[in-house]
Amino acid sequence: MGRNKKKGVLRLDNAMGKSNVDLRYLNFERADCYRTNFSNSIFENLDMRAAKFKFCNLSGANLKNVNLTGANLKGSDLTNADLTGANLKNCKIEGANFRGAIITDANFEHVNKAKARSLNIDVSETDQNKKDTINK
Image 1 (tube, rainbow, N blue to C red):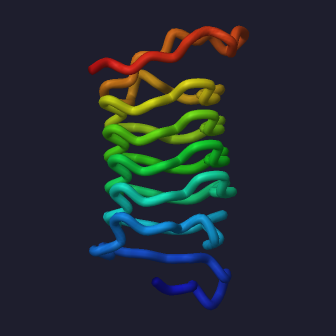
Image 2: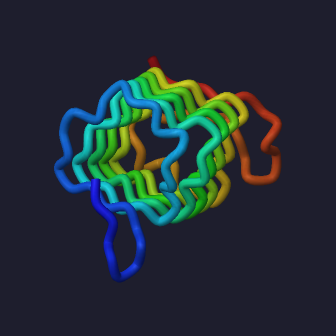
């Protein structure tokens, strides 16, 4: 793990072996992670606003109640991740795989859901109380 000295931002590029880790005490706001393995890791209740998780492995990750407002999840694998109560407002999810993910009460406001893989949400932007579902 490294910090960009200029901005104080967490940067992880092609980092391997980060799976099954409790990351709840790190600052992921504006983090810049690329092709990093976070499978089965715990991010619960973290502020991850404007973080970049491009092409990361987040399969099976605990992302309950995380704030991913404005984050970039392009090409990431969120297979079987738990996004219960997560805020993904204005999140970029192009090519992200949500197969089997739990997205109950997740906020996908202003997100282009059509560009994600295996994501079928029955929610309009004016009615956030409807049920969210994932194609299995």
